[in-house]
Amino acid sequence: MSKMMKRLLIILITIVMLAACQKPLQPASVIIIDPVRHYYPVIQGEKMSVTYEIENTSDNPLFIQEVQTSCGCLVPRDELPIVILPHRNGFVTLDYNTIMNNGYVDHYVYCYGNFQDTTAIVMSFDTNVVPASDYFRDYEQLWNEQEKISPTIHTFVNGTSAQKGYYTDTGVNPRQERKEEVQNEIDQMAP
Image (cartoon, rainbow, N blue to C red; front, side):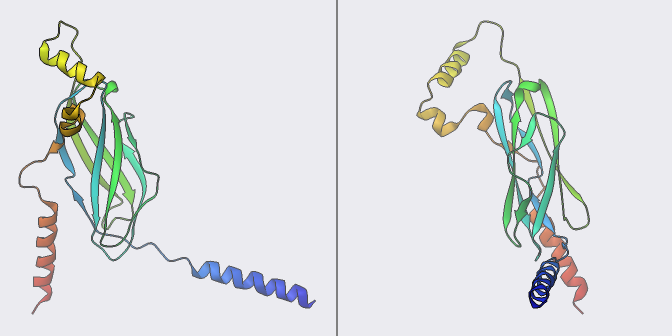
């Protein structure tokens, strides 16, 4: 009987310890660095990597449970859930296959998690996907094709057309907006 009591006691202690470990998930405030992007044109068939930086500005960890995209040509690279510790920066990286698009494209990325004041954040980017030419190529196009076959130091330094970066709309600075919001809250609380 004492062995049975010991087993029950061990089971009871285990259940209590497991139940005590659960803490409710608190919301986290974030700043998305450059949430709206405009990429330079790319040639159809090239693969692009799109990385968004997310800054966790709260004292709670951020858990991104799900990443949804507006097109099947965008695939999240990271394994879910993505965890960003308090006051740290994390990244959401997507692989974009341009073979499925042609012309102007506008894509959206929805991240679901424990965000403050919302259940999802939205990031977007656009670009022009230019088809490869079907006519006689000029010397620059022939040079670019040759560079693809045998990359030189020029390719390593300047990158391919899918690695040229992006630009954002002027006047949009999420860090400055957040600093102003915090300063307004401090001013309201001060006597």
